[in-house]
Figure 1 (tube, rainbow, N blue to C red):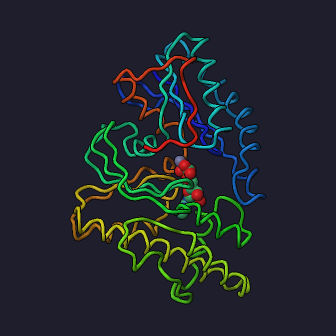
Figure 2: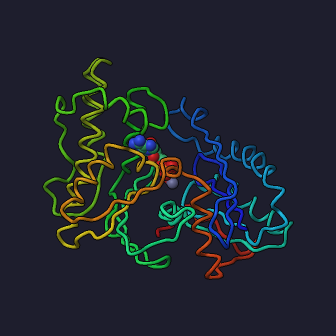
Length: 325
Ligand code: KG4
Ligand code: ZN
């Protein structure tokens, strides 16, 4: 079995995955949303301190499996340095105590493998990764061949939801609350401009849209928040779809997936499904419970790393807060 640890941002999570069957034997996650809500975003130092108590409390439940562990998998890149280190230090301690090696796992690869928890993986696949830290289009050919073909020039899709929620004083994370609010508003009332719509670039940008929303909020009463949220969600998503269509003309989609925390957005899922109709391409998504950060996806990804023998020692593992795929 492999024990996997995730602490790249504000979720403390541990999972145990059986190597031979890919079965998820144990999974637990403690989120820090309430603690960060007051600040409208993740406060790294607070997140680090919360991991320091949450991770050991989850680990205590895993003790019955300790004798059967073959490796410790841990997210070591990318993410917040002060929170990644919490998971990595725990992995080092377990590696020493149990005399087993460490499998360092890339968080974004973990999100891609959230599609295949308890399943075989199937590639090639075009993946739209939409999380709090990233908005990327990735051509995935295999575990080792992942090419980022488009990325954001500034904010990410999920982060823009967080920032809009913060402007409306709706707490953190913004994604679910803005999605719910958008359902009750008329999306046509605020005709925001779609980012980069005249640009030939296949890239993403959310800072301009965020400013348009800020101006609308500043000159509106709270009754206007539902139509503003709806127009924001529509424009943010139209932007993704417009660029995906542009890309699809060059390289038609065969199999497409959305992963990352914001892949839980049902409006986004619906729009991508519509976009894929002309290609007759299936849409893959992870179960809703595994879209946001979790150790189950890290454990699933670690099965591939284990098979390849990508082990490191507790002395050699590095924390890499900035690390492209
Ligand atoms: O993947 P994730 O848990 O953490 C990172 O790796 O960043 O993604 C968290 C992000 C947050 O920005 C959150 O607001 C966003 O995913 N998110 C959503 C939704 N649910 C979560 N964004 C839009 N709509 C949602 N329903
Ligand atoms: Zn993530």
